[in-house]
Amino acid sequence: MPLMRKIVNDPVYGFITIDHPLVFEVIAHPYFQRLRRIQQMAFAHLVYPGAVHSRLHHALGAYHLMGNALAELKSKGVAISQEEEVAARIAILLHDIGHGPFSHALEHRLIEGVHHESISLLIMEHLNKQLGGQLELAIRIFRNDYHKPFLHQLISGQLDVDRMDYLSRDSFFTGVAEGVIGYDRILKMLTVHDGELMVEEKAIFSIEKFLVSRRLMYWQVYLHKTVLCAEQMLVKIISRAKELIRKGIAVNAPTQALDFFLQQKGKLDISQHLDQFCRLDDADVMAAIKNWTLHPDRVLSALCSMLMDRRLLKVRLDSDPTDAELLNSMKVGLEEKTGISPEEAAYLVFTGDASNTTYDPSDEKINILFKSGEVKDISKVDNALIQHNLAHPVKKYYFCYLNPASIPDFFGTPNQL
Image 1 (cartoon, rainbow, N blue to C red):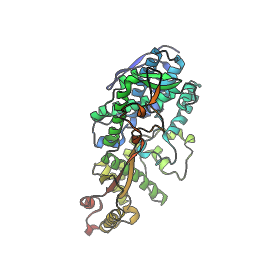
Image 2 (cartoon, rainbow, N blue to C red):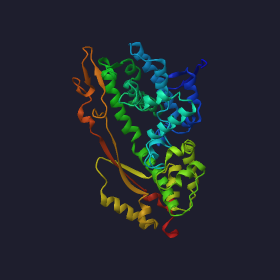
Image 3 (cartoon, helix red, strand yellow):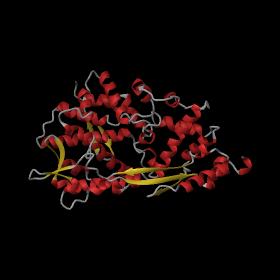
Image 4 (cartoon, rainbow, N blue to C red):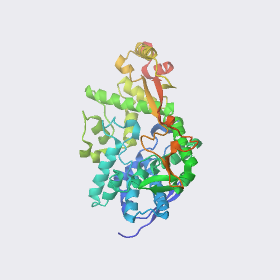
């Protein structure tokens, strides 16, 4: 392959270098370029207006950190061939390529029962065929089917470069300082022991800061009550559109790709429709929502109008489940004021829960390698800040409902009903 070198100016890390023709070929592929049209943080920009970066930004950032991590490990004598290095970089580039529109918010909604990682693997295998088998090693590393497990741990693990980038990037674009981590120091402290990824003992405090920052970002940004509400409204919009279609009511999507998935009944074999899937992005969904603000179905049009104009449902976040009597009384009140059915009211008054775990050593450990050669889990070092009690998920319950003052705007006055 001919030598090539290109640089990308990244606001978080500065210049990112692309110095291998196969990597450039992957980046230039339409499937990867589609990630430009999928926002990294879904509706977080409704709370943090700067959070409009894309999954392509994140993929390139994780690629950059992967390169730094591999260079550091090689400098410490870890055996990594050029082929393995290129494969690991490509694997992290493509780790999120299976995300659909609005990423996690619509996962399992447009395509039921299929996780984005499964779609990522299908797309990687499809690209591998197009590229004459050159992604075989990248796929093995991605699947954790390679004899050097630390390469997979850099892609998917407690200390993977995926998490390092999204925390650094999301805190940068939201302006939330609590998410800032010392990714450069963590990378410098990475090491490999018995084939497993570990960190040197000098990095203990940086790792603890990393885990605490992740916890704070989840509750302050990713699971912010307004962000949760907006994402759940999007889920309700897609669910309502599908229900109307099942009832034989016309709900036209503005693009063929979105229309294809809305019209599907039952489980779909996504492996047979990868081209259709890769035509989908946030633009399809937002155009549909904009169109459906004028749909004759009052529930669908109300939800779409609220989301378009950021006049969201009211939302409460509590440590205890929403009282069933309160939930029922709010639904009944809405039915009486608008004339909608109990089934329709459930789209506008609903509850649910969100949870996050700071660190679960039973899932995957962060091992600290001491100078003596001893290995300890981060939660077991002396005076550990991260302890086993943080392995239990923190759960909060959200309660979303239509503000009574907004009823006339979306459903008319009682005299109009």
